[in-house]
Image 1 (cartoon, rainbow, N blue to C red):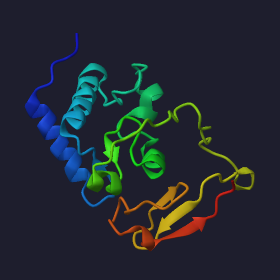
Image 2: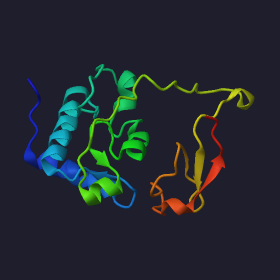
Image 3: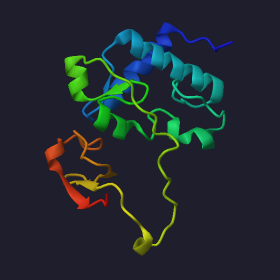
Length: 168
């Protein structure tokens, strides 16, 4: 049986998410019912496992094995940049939020990306994504395009520059 989650818990968690996301280029899905159901799933997983595993993925019940799919998951940035929403649809782009676009199916990235070893000599490193640098705060992110908004200082996309060119 699923651990019970109250409407108040959902409301409080949602308010915390909205506070964290404010000015960082990510938005919660504008469909309130859908969003609240996803938040309920995250809260159930917190009660069940002790961490907020994405409710749209099967948990291994081991935080170390699930670390990549603890919300927000490792795949959120690439999914939102490419498809306008993350895999489960909780986080959406500014465009999808403002226009309340319907979200289509997002392909699963988990297990398809090769993990980068913790330590590798620089001369052996192959950079597959461009590394972008925020000119204001120095935030670095490795992805195909710069984020719409810096998640650290909140400046727009045009304040980013290419730090390391990726090899495709």
